[in-house]
Image (cartoon, rainbow, N blue to C red; front, top):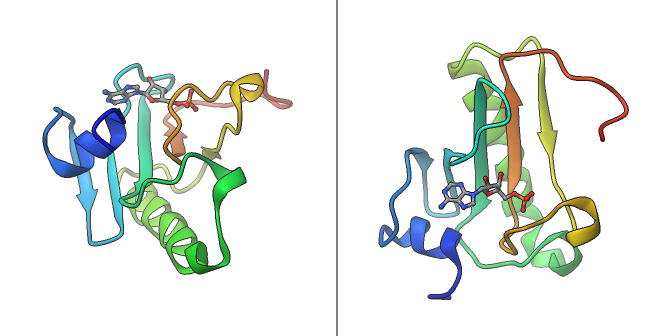
Length: 113
Ligand code: AMP
């Protein structure tokens, strides 16, 4: 998907501050951070969003959480962080390649806006 910015980051043809990559998952700093730590954790496979996940994606979805946990520990925010998946424009999704926001380094309110 050459028109997908996250696919280009995963392939190394668009710039990003990548903090983790394996054969299934890539993680990089959000370009407009909303917290002192704001990382995006994405599948290497192009999936537009949660509404498009399939049963065969279940192992990869688990990997997203394990990478989130690992990065939260490495970045010393494991005592309090937020994982966010915006699904659909109405919920604030702006990039249609599935991604988990890992936010930390500050306190968060509830309910979210
Ligand atoms: P969402 O609004 O949930 O779809 O989140 C998309 C996120 O991607 C936003 O927080 C953007 O700041 C971030 N973003 C968009 N383009 C880039 C990019 N080239 N590199 C890193 N983060 C990006």
